[in-house]
Image (tube, rainbow, N blue to C red; front, side, top):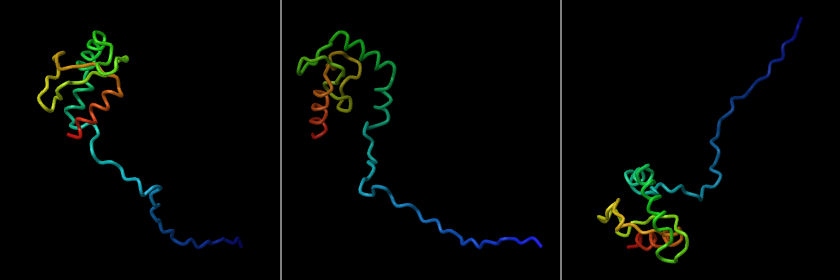
Amino acid sequence: MVGFLYISVKKMVLIPKPKKRPWIVKNTKKVWGREEDQAFYKSYRWRRHKEDYLIENPECVVCGRMANTVDHIIPIRLGGSRWKWSNLQSMCTSCHNSKTAKESNR
């Protein structure tokens, strides 16, 4: 007679894995702000407008280095114009970041 090997298998209890780094909490705030702002800055029209402005004004207005960012002098959320060149200024990344940080602390 052929013998069969029966193995009793206990039911495995699935225990959820602990988080790898529970002390790190994901930031739930939107970094970009409102979705309309995000859509505006990613639009083709704005990117083309920015390129045209940087060709005409290639230097940072603060430090004189090569600019790679166009900044709104009066922020859009405070009523500044999005498209008028009189409300724009070319800035390098470090000067733009420091200006933005000062504005956000107001």
